[in-house]
Length: 119
Image (cartoon, rainbow, N blue to C red; front, side):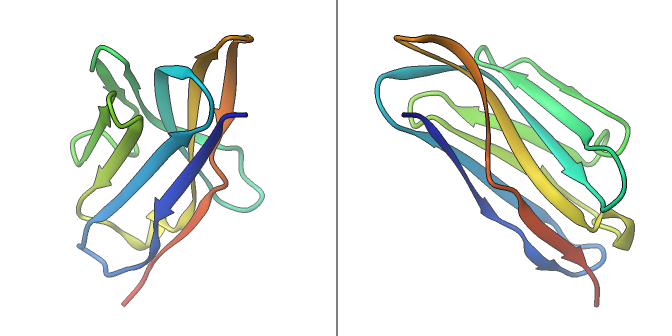
């Protein structure tokens, strides 16, 4: 059984930085890629960016230019750092990863973490 556990979040000051980690655990597996999303109530989940297990990253507009997505493939942990946080960045943040186990490749989600940007 593979799990993704998301850590970080909480209250962030405007102009401050957010750092989230997403750790995979369980029986033998490998992470193929990881993506980061966020969701505001009554809105669709929004893709922020993505990283492959080879370290290739891509970013969408909400995160572009102020974010860094990284992954430690040995420790099986992914990271999202967003700088210059704004009140409109308030949302529930999620990680998602395509993980290969002996049973094949499935997509897993972290539990989500509330991020509130406020002074």
